[in-house]
Image 1 (cartoon, rainbow, N blue to C red):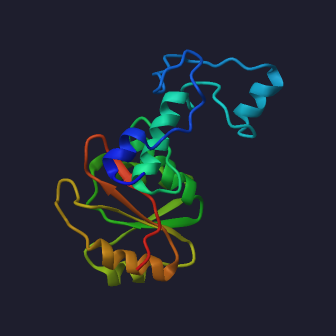
Image 2 (tube, rainbow, N blue to C red):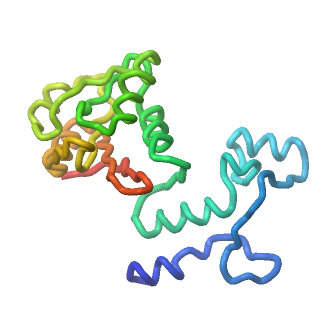
Length: 196
């Protein structure tokens, strides 16, 4: 199958066959899911067995959405979360931690700047603020403890526009991820490595 529209409609067929014969996955309106034993659900909660246990973590409807986004975007993996701040928090906490740093701009959406400056700082994450419009200053701020460069495609509200290709060249040269947020509703982001 080729083509965006064809893949959007027909590309994902990896869900278990519906016991009632539905050709499309239904919307699962369930909080919890049944398992054969306490050990079985323990394995699911521990992440040692792929299955659904509790909808706040994952459910078949969200899993189907993630598969579709993965197919359409060509991503290695997709995780759907409930908000842009949840997405940004997840990716930053996965990549960085105590005694590490990220390179970013002060020209970020206010809540994102607050997350980086006030919420994550006490956890030991250093934020190094430089102009995303100046690839040389980004390169100068990178060291062995840098875990990512984080930018918005167009900052809100300053409307600073970074040359993503130039920033990607810097991050690729240092083998660190470039995280780019896209100011859409709902807030979306990409955390793929971009090579020159």
